[in-house]
Image 1 (cartoon, helix red, strand yellow):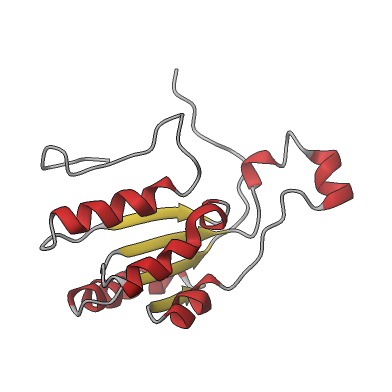
Image 2 (cartoon, rainbow, N blue to C red):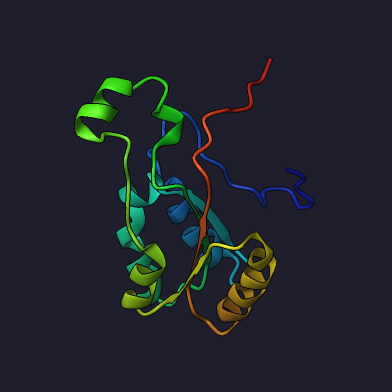
Length: 149
């Protein structure tokens, strides 16, 4: 990721809960209302802090949340095979775009990769209208991850 402006990227550390970015984006938008503030989530993270999307609606904090939804804690599949098989421990489900709409925000579920850029453009337009946005991108379950040397 390339950041052009100092202090314009806020990221999570190793001591934060999943979903921490939502609160960061909300605070960033309140501090700089003229800027586009984007929160990037996974489907496990929204389980921790997703209800605070309602706070964005209620308090009129027009951020954009991009949710990568593969219906699983896929990174854990290799290390949790027994609990996944017996108890579905890594399975996650939900229609989070519908949740966003139910809260009064803008929610859109995207299943076609060709619709990603148009969805982001629609989302930006909605934030400019003062509406919080949740774009839910349906992705595949990937278990390969990048590693730093």
